[in-house]
Amino acid sequence: MAARSRTRTLQVVDTEFSADAVEWCPVPGWHSLLACGTYQLQRPSDKAGGESEPPLRVGRLYLYRFSTEEGCAAPLMELQRADAPAILDMKWCHVPVSERPLLGIANARGALELQQLTGSEKSGCALEAVSSLDLGPDRLALSLDWSTGRGESSASSVKVVCSDSKGCVSLLSLCGSAASLHLLSQWKGHEFEAWIAAFDYWNSDVLYSGGDDCRLKGWDVRTGSSCPIFTSRRHSMGVCSIQSNPHREHVLATGSYDEHVLLWDSRHMKQPLADTHVRGGVWRLKWHPSHEPLLLAACMHNDFHILDCRAVLDGSSEESEIISSYILHNSLAYGADWSRLSLAGPAPAEEEGEGLADPAPAEWEGEGLAGPAPAEGEGEGLAGPAPAEGEGEGLAGPGAVEGEGEGLAGPAPAEGEGEGLAGPAPAEGEGEGLAGPAPAEGEGEGLAGPAPAEGEGEGLAGPAPAEGEGEGLAGPAPAEGEGEGLAGPAPAEGEGYLQIHYESPTASFDTALEDVQGRYRPEPLTPAPRSQSSSPPTESSLLATCSFYDHVLHVWRWDCSPA
Image (cartoon, rainbow, N blue to C red):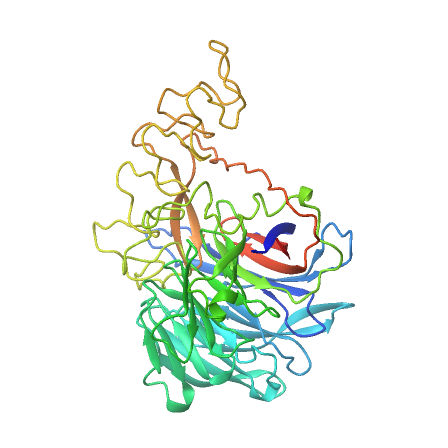
């Protein structure tokens, strides 16, 4: 019987700028430290004469310490904040360098920066910049990875790989006790943005990269970089997440704007071991630090999910099971990471409430943000159907350097395609919304699920009033077929919803989050499920995630118990 699991928010922190990267320190003795990076696109005012300066990409680095003491209402304490160029990615080296944790940062100035921890975990600590290396002009550093993923490398053999918005992959090494950077090689790996680069943690001479050209590539630095050892076109959109499994050799996870997580045997890259549709572009993937089959996925417009890959690794399934979800509202899921800290004490009672606002769906019911997931092919997510191959891959991630014209995820669409940044505009009457296609005429779901059966009329506002008594809590009863739900009267034809401008890493887009009166569209209210078993959870994990629109860092726990 399947395990039962649930999530519970421990703390929510406003990061002021949009948060897109979060990393727990993996170095023993420092596991309570958490780093968070942010990104904000600031548009300067126009100058006289019609000229304007280019937008500025600014960011901020936060350092926190998490307390495991019981009864602590706010366990996350801020230790440091420092303004910086916009941060696109960051990762801790898994082993100490000069006996200190070292944090690598990929920033919007096209540089890899190293910051080392000073002080002590108990008496106070801070990050200090120790080294920086520019990857080249007119580019953004988009990702980085360390060769130390299994925690077994010595500091003398540590290497770093970076990818950038020019499609290049750069291999660097650390030199000396001062943690200075040395560029070993750099090559053009992809036609457009190289969203991600990662090491094979079992062989640091082998690298993987993914780009906006929809290509997943492998490289062996011993044979040179002129030709990849493989090129896969299995993903249909930009490849933006890759991670080697640190517990089992030859296992590789990749994710894409195409909303699929693929698991691979790195010895046979023609066909993946498993293909799991997660209904959101996969910006980050993280294997659990101690449990081999657990994989955390940040799925942009469809929240954070925990995948159990046990059946895939055993060879008994071609699809991973989504066993738990952490639900967001009106935001994008970006940074995500597991903590190595052990959570003391029993799991909280279920009455305290799971998740941020909704409980995780049981065994992946596919709800998305607001009701049942659309049927396959109807186009999930925040802004209509997923784009066809090559049309520009969605809401998802840092866009091209100014002047390149690719938009967020590939070349700009041809005139008349009109996809925006989230795929083709829906046909008239399909309904944009936050929850996929609009209901068929007469269904009247609004945002809160199917309309009540005739004569019920309650929605979320209580029983329908007797004839002539008036409207109840939700305004006048809608005329047959109007179906306003919770958001008031349906907008007049052609009015739609107000478009609100939001920034994503390196680009921007519009999305409808308000009704025509300027009110935020409400969320569905879902009662928390009741456990059928009083057995205590057998496993608890601490996680941190961050969301983009609402510039929020979430710290939460996940408890898993036998069914």
